[in-house]
Length: 121
Image 1 (tube, one colour):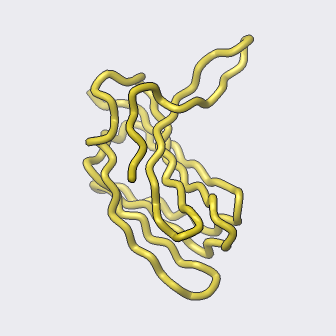
Image 2 (cartoon, one colour; image 1 turned 120 degrees about the vertical axis):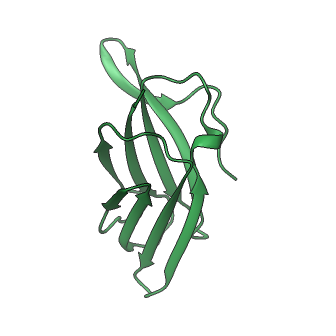
């Protein structure tokens, strides 16, 4: 069964990302500019969880980083139908994977880390 996933690129560093792309299976998401402290998210309706994803980053200084990260191996076997996957770019330009999902708190949706998921290293 195909589950819903949303993917996002989060710039947790201090340098501006001039262009970012996320690619897996037959899916390719062009993110564009991601300023420090900001994120861009895209809904991938009907996409299955990939084994891995390739993240391409072009920084303001012209340097390009391409990193392949594991996705499915770190996801708990029992997980909600809809999951948000954040590809977080740190100060050292390394991409880490974070899994989140929405819960109801006082009648509002809140995005929280997915219990049982292992953060990427």
